[in-house]
View 1 (tube, rainbow, N blue to C red):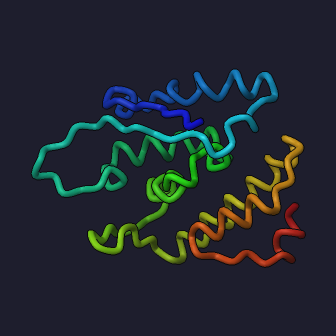
View 2: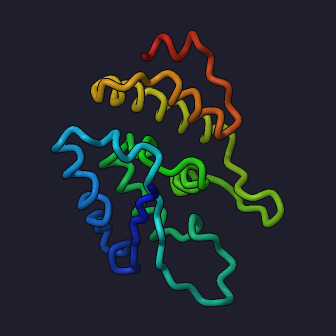
Length: 158
């Protein structure tokens, strides 16, 4: 079951995280956050001029909202719907990239490596606290971006 979180222009411009906190905080309080593993997606209602060629991840206000979100919930990638492409889109909000009309998102390679490493550390610690084995999930996160994380690395952090 996918859970869609709709963001509007006012929420984005005011850095209002309530669309996420209203859903996440009750689950955290109940110890039930694992129930939404890979189920969240974002519907971003941010009107643009028809002549605006930018992708949504190239709009500074939208990126700033996601940077704020990632600061409050750095483990949120665990909850995103990876199968629908929500994780790469989320990463595009945080990682410098270019958008190619035929090839899609082209991340800065060094920035993407840092993002994956940072998320690996964050998820390893957070998932252990949730009593969830982190190794396969972190390995899958890397694979989505074309990285094969070494078992020795995963063993050292999990």
